[in-house]
Image (cartoon, rainbow, N blue to C red; front, side):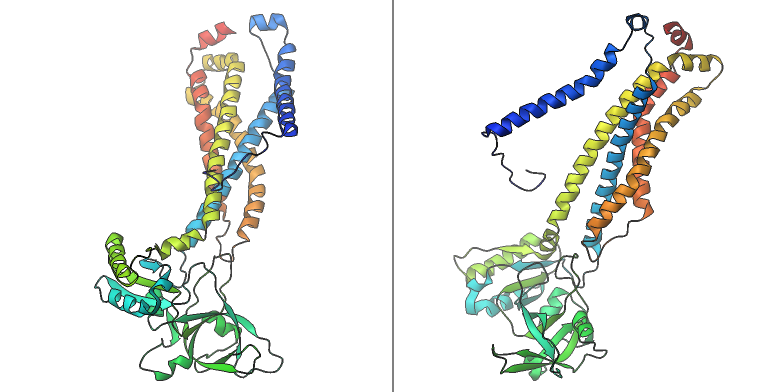
Amino acid sequence: NILSGKQLEISYLTNPQFLIGIIVLTLFIGILAGSYPALFISSFKPVAVLKGKLRSGAKSGWLRSSMVVFQFSSSIIMIIATTVVFNQLSYIQNKKIGFDKEGVIIIHDTYMLDKQIESFKNEIVNDPNIISGTISSYLPVESSRNNNGTFRDTRTNDEKLTPMQTWRVDYDYIKTMGMEIIEGRNFSKDFGGDSAAVIINEAAAKHFEWDNPLNERIGQFASSDGSEINTYNVVGVVKDFHFESLKNTISPVLFFLRPDDSSVAFRFKGTNTAEIINLIKTKWDKFAAGQPFEYSFMDEDFIKMYQAEQKIGEIFSTFAFLAIFVACLGLFGLAAFTAEQRTKEIGIRKVLGASVPGIILMLSKEFAKLVVIAFIISVPVAYYYMNIWLQDFQYRIDLTAGIFLLAGIIAISIAMITVSYHALKIATANPAKSLRYE
């Protein structure tokens, strides 16, 4: 439950059919798991057992090697998947998103301030630790929003209405959000006609196919029957910004100078958030006495949009660790078995002058081949599925060769460390004892 972030309950424990199924499945797995060693051991000749001359056939050796390849293939796939997920999350968190999400505190339930919301904002922005503040209908973090049908002022009869994001903001919104105006200007009290002005983003300009959007006009219906139309003059263009998950492309956004009390946010200086929270809470208690004070930070709200991906990364990393652990156990056992089977051979090689590093290299090469085979099998599988996962994001990382090579290096390094114990043990053993043992 902790790992998945969900509260899962088992409600089948009182179901007789479920319990019978579990018992049958357990017995089947137990019989299947025990059948191989039982058949394998029963095939031994008593004389060979007593003399310590057990030798495995080609079929059993192939089976053991296949299991190691399968286990390491699974491990490499999980390592690649974990790397891709966390690289994508890192890309999301570090990508330029068109506004500055750091150092912004959002105040919730601002409807409780009612008509005092402007006074609340003004008293807070007068503090030297506050850079600016804004009152608006929406902020560039995940929330419910509205789309209004919009058209060019020169609309032709066959031109369809286009649903566009319609945000009502104040004079300080662009500054507080850290957005960049790339053409024209911001709303200003120096221009009395800004109540009929609109600022658009690049996506809106592209939609209308405007090379020079300044002083172009857009229209929206002011009545449900379409008899009244409001027209607005484009006075500025802001650089495109991400207000939804990077799984989505950037949609057209329109900013109108009509403040709404749905959202209040402040940009502050420094990193002493406790001082900022205390400042705003003091003002809140003054203007909304007795009402609960709720807030959040914009950077944290932005990260929350990717909680599902973070959970996936945690789950993959957990299973990658488990897969590597199981694979290492299998490889450790296979290395021990191989070392035991080749005791006489290693003893003879040492008598004939073979060096310890040479023997270790000889033994390690065999296991390295298994990991290389596992790597060759796992790469196309991991590429296929992680490419599908990345397709959900309109803005994503590339699946470069480095990601796969890193997984291969990690896998073969872990394998060699696992094998090294038995390889070193048999390589440094006294050859006389090895030959006497045989």
